[in-house]
Length: 293
Image (cartoon, rainbow, N blue to C red; front, side, top):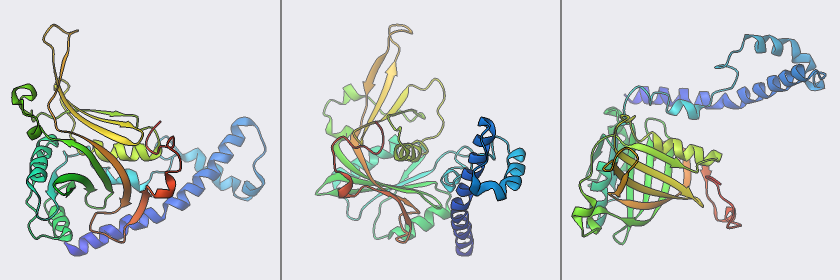
């Protein structure tokens, strides 16, 4: 098993190293294609390679014209099987954190909760790989308040690091009849305002935590981005007054998320390449956003 993981990791890193060469070749072919379409002369620096590049352009189709990234390969098998998620906490969790993780288990379909105990992260990741888990979610706290969430996709990453703010659990709401019970049907997803490259990457990580729902399910989960703060909301809807009358009811929990790092690896790999990180000098203006408009 260990040798297989090493071999697969080497293959992944090799594909990653080829991305730069493929991107350079794609730019050359794009320049020649544009020159031919517009009737302009071939750029001087490409005239020696024109014949070979034009032959490759003639053999391309829609699938091979644009180079694929290993970022796409990370979720290449997502459509073949439903996600299987393990949720755990930092060591010695408080009662509020334990309650929050219990509710997250019902938010994510096919999720299993594990008491951390004395296990280290590397042991948890290896166990999850051996049992075909697709993701690991680790929730942190500060003085009894959940303040961090790490989502790590298996077997090769990526790993997204989020800060949590304004966490309100179902347990905190006293009126239990108002919120009702939490359904376990696969939910519809609403991903709002993830328009920039980092935002699309974040939305891709979040949406693959949920399986494909049935068309008639009445459960809705929303990730709404505003000023790089992602609001998580959980609703169900009912048609009581006919097809044009909808009653929307929030069933919790609710919280805000703020992403601060994405790494190309699992959470146990300290040497993993950092794809994106939010550093202090990047916050030079309040109007600058990284996820959406």
